[in-house]
Every structure is written in C-alpha cells, then in structure tokens.
Length: 415
Image 1 (tube, helix red, strand yellow):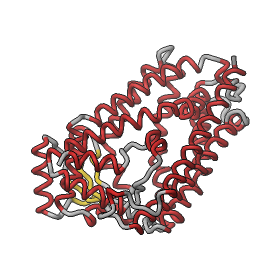
Image 2 (tube, one colour):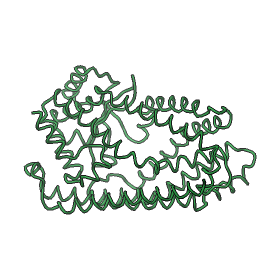
Image 3 (tube, rainbow, N blue to C red):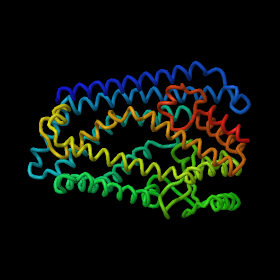
Image 4 (cartoon, rainbow, N blue to C red):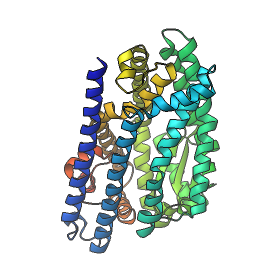
C-alpha cells in the first residue's frame, strides 16, 4: 500500500507542477502575443504604453511564479521521499528524547523555516527587482528585513500556542481529537478575525482616520443605506511599501473596519471611490465573507477527520519517506501534501470567487452609477499594471476576479 501511495504522490506532484508551468507559459505567450494592441474596449482609456507595461509586468511575475513552483516541488520531494524530514526528526529526537510535543513543535517550526528561507530570495526578487523596475516598490531593504522579523514574531506569538494545543489534543483527546481541535481552530480563527484590525495590521502599516469630511459623509451615507456598520473609516499608508492601490473591509462582527489605501484615494475621485466601496458592500450584502468562513471551516473539519484516519496508517508515513510514525509527523506531512491533493479544486474555487465578484459588481451598479465603477476599474487596471489580455484557460484556472473585458462589458450592460 505504501508503494502505491508513493506512486500516487509522485504523479500528483509532477502533474500539478506540469499544469502550473504549462498554464503559466500559455499565459505569458498569450499576453505577449497581444502586447502591441490595446483591446478595443479600452482604446480610449488605456494607452499602448500602459498596456505594454502591464503585459511586461505580468509576464515577469508569472515567470517568477514558475520558478517558485519548481522550487516548491523540489523542496516537497526532498522533505518527504528525499528523507530530510526523517533526518531532522532523528536529530531532534537526540536533543529532546523525552518531550514529544516540544519535539514535534520544533520539527514543524524547523520545516517551515527552511521552506521560508528557500523561497525568500524570490520574495526579494519580486520586491527589489520586478516591482522596483516597474515603479511599484516603495520599501527599503531595512523595511523588508523588519517585516520579516515582524512576521516571524507574530507567527511565533500566535502560531506557537495553537500548534502546542493541536499536538496536545492529538496526544490526549482520544479518538475524536480532530473534532475537538476543529472547534478550537474555528474559535481561534474567529478570534483572529476580530483582533487583526486593531492589534496585528498596525504592526505593518499605519492606519489613520479618514480626514476628508465630505468624502467621509458620502461613504457613511452609503454604508447606512446598505445597512453596514463599522468601527470607522481608515486610510492605510500603502504607499510606504507599494504603489498598488486597494480598498477592503477587515475584521468580523462589531470589529469591522473600512480601509482605503492612500494610493487609491490619490488616484480616484469621490464618485469612483464610492463606487468601489459599493462593490465591497456588495460582498457584505451577499454574505460572501460569511459563506467563505463556513466553507473554510467545513474544509478544515473534513481535513482534520482525514488526518485522524491517516495518522493511524503506516502506509501514510512509509509512502512519504518517513519510517517512524508520530502524531506530529502526521500533522506535518498532512500540511505539506495537502496543497498537492487540493490542486484539482483550484479552478472550482476560482470560479466561485468570480461569481461573487459579478454579484458584488451588480450590487454596486444598483447603489451608484455603473459608469463610476467602470472608470474606477479602468484606472486600477492601468495604475496596477494588470493585464487586459489574460490567457482564457489560465484565467479560468486561477483568477479570483473576472477578466477585465468581461467584467467591464457586464457593467456597461447595466447602464
């Protein structure tokens, strides 16, 4: 059985890597083939220079992602069938022979650190080569390093306790430990949604109350009309790190905040900002966030139940290059291989997300003039260097948002 599982695992790793590379190359080739002609729908609003810049920026990002896909596959195979996890486990067993939970936490942390360090150069290239070359990067190298340490601090502070709880429940909570852990995990995630806006996000960006009183009055009127209550309107100093613009809701329940990137406020007029907010309110009105939370919790319950079964099967460990079964090794292996086995669901998740975006656009078109949202989207496509000519198959497989031409055409039909 272990040999069969090994074969299945290898096939899935290679197949998913092949699909990622094939789709990525299709995407780059399609973009470059349409690089010298602005789509008809955007001829009056997007210059050829801006269109070519978006094509080159997207192509550069995709090529880096393909390198990342190859590296991730090699790391995964090295960790498992290459025996790296087995070797690391043996080393930590010599240092911590009598402390299984601590040993497991340290092993998992070690694997995560190695994975992060291997891909760290790619993050650096994205920030200081690609983003810098196209005028998006505003970060200094000192800020880049500072963010790394902040992320590590938050990961240890929040991830450490939940990891110890998980390992303790796996050891002490009986056959249905996975159900108890699911409850704890769900409560933890809801807690994180509540505290993220006020305790974690400010570690990385500065949030200040909106100072534009006339714009604030318009936004508050729109939110009241849509039945949305928040803790306030905030402007984030996105320009300190990037030239990209965005707006979003954050938080959960009574802790919701409306956040605008300062770069967004600089690029859009009041009508367009209101239209963008109306789109975000459409997600709220259609309960997309709640539905995603329910979906996430459902998938995590199924995943933990599967892990509860797999951790008792010798073929699961042996098939992934590990000779010594343990609770913590089962958890680590499951974390590592889940993306490979879930890869087939990616286009379904992307399609569901695009449906949500269409629903939010339709809601925004009812709350404000669709022309304002069209103008806002065109500016965002242009200023964020988002390609207007994605490969249709790549877009269907990956994109959480509809292609620009389709999205704009639907909004124009609502005018």
